[in-house]
Image (cartoon, rainbow, N blue to C red; front, side):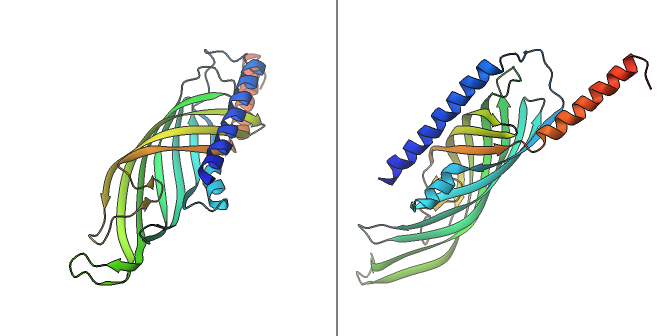
Amino acid sequence: MRRPRICRYTCLLLLISIACLSLNAKGKGKGKPTDKAPLLSGIAVSADLVGLTMKAMGTKFANMEVGGRLNIYDKYFPAVELGIGDCHREATELGNTFSATAPYMRFGIDYNFNKKHNGNRLFGLFRYGFSSFKYDIGNPSFTDPVYGTTGPLEVNGETATAQWLEFGAAVETKLWSFIRLGWSIRYKARLSLSHPDGGEPYFVPGFGKNDGNGWGGTVNIIFDVGQNIMKAKNKKKEKEAKKTANGKP
């Protein structure tokens, strides 16, 4: 029941993003492809709403993250994402348990395909992800495959390191002033996973369920904290340029 609810909420937020994108496109269609944005057009911070929602709903695992990025020419967006992955799982059939809570990081770049500077953005994105973490595994009634004896199994503090790549697309629109809403879908491809012989981790922080590859997504609330500062600086430069052109000191 929880997964359909999460998908429902994610789809609802996606529809809101698309609706806002459409409204902004009508209201701000005056942006010209020839308009050139300044070198540093803004600085933004963000938080992913999907991970927080999953954690609040008590799902088996969740990735809770924040991010930061630069806006270069309103075209290139170098980005960093930092988060904490949390998983506490108990398999009902075999009785296996898995637990891990650890940080992760991703960094990469977004490319804006929208040539008009009208507040809407359509991104292609790339990320490199990394996490070094510890995890616990156990089983209250483990049967030894060699001796056939049954007893509790508990292995704590196993260490693993994972690396992966993410490719995807995202849409983003302005909600109000410096507040924006963005949605992304990502394909994740695992590069490497090192772990002890005691057992492979069920979950990788930042990546999700430990498969060779998979899909993921985010719904971000974004704060363009540097946007107003950049605009103020640009207006000041324009005024100074006009004064110089008019021969005023």
